[in-house]
Length: 325
Image (cartoon, rainbow, N blue to C red; front, top):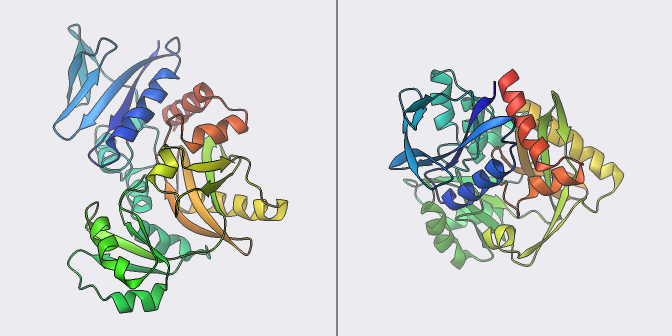
């Protein structure tokens, strides 16, 4: 009997439209011969299944079921394609755990930890992972620009502590730009992280649990036309993404070891994508995305293809790993 798979997409953050694109890519690349698949929109005011005729069927939040054509459907597994809140920060996954529904992501605590940039960096640093010097600000804190610059220097990056897709991020080149950048970041989150600029190539590394083994995908070097790998660079073609990255075998081995170690430290499941800057060929960890983009512009599909894994195999594997977990 075919399993019923709910592909959740949307969410409550600025990443809602990116998530809807990712979710549709997942839906279109899962075999309908092998699984019964359902697009589930998780939006602030409504949870519903949307069918191929664009009809909406409300989700029963008591058990995450749906009634379609007078037939109640319970799901065997949830494919998590929600970037940001509540999918990537673990909120909805805690609910799935409570109702004993399997999903393709790591446990909710691991998701919450990795989504919080400050807390995630604090954990991995204890294992000798190199990171940028950083300064944390809560919305209620007093802002001392001189103190910030003294710690992290210039240029630096101001970013929301809990957000993705580069929303709210600014590269600050002088003291006058600091306050506007902080205000921009606070529009996305009540907590922000200010990080020192690391001078070196940016490498993004996909890691996943593939057929029961932790696998590091071919790495991608990011060459952006903009000041940094921002939303335009990620989704609007303002960057060059070179897979495999133009790095030495020695540097590749260092990155591969670091990426796999971080995946294990954070007790990840499913697929992830982490960002690194190479400083004198040493990897510095920036952050990890536990629900990476799956659109046609996204990096995980590119890296999987370079590894000889097509999208159907990639998504089927995530489902099977979740069902067998």
